[in-house]
Length: 195
Image (cartoon, rainbow, N blue to C red; front, side):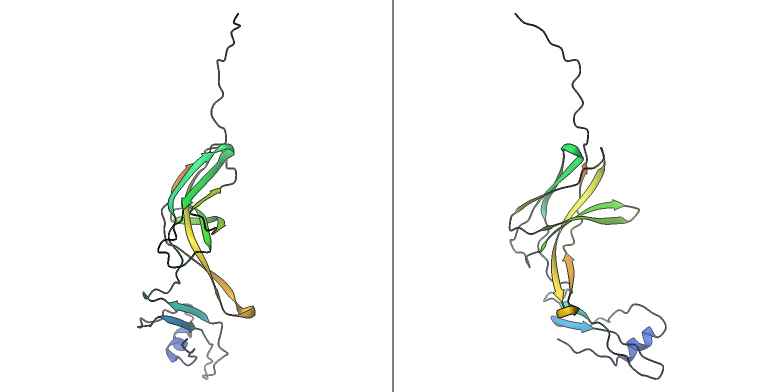
């Protein structure tokens, strides 16, 4: 794990003008765990205590997000009775970089940019087939749905520990339309007495 460096004059100068973000310059970081933190610097060069550290893990392939799992497969949706949408998908463990914690189900709308709304979180059960039923929706409500695998990582220790969820990046959706009325009533029914 690399050491925190509170004496980085370049970063201190950058934040002195009110800038709120800083991009770490491209570096040939070897795989491992790195910590980044900020300190306040007075006009007289006095440093504050080091702020909360952000832990960044560089993977063997150079990516900075930890492994999550495979993307869900065979996503499908069916309208069932009472305005409910049943979402189904499969998950294969073959070649997964890590076992996911579970799955997150999103509705995706364009407004005008895509808006992702989390509807439910489903834990991994060690099964290859999964399903989830929505709440009852108004008749003909249309939802575009996406299912992503996610894994929760815990950083820090004790009271300073915190969880971060990382998800697969798949964006494919399926669209379902709720049916809260069922088929139309049968009309023209007649009876005939025989015998």
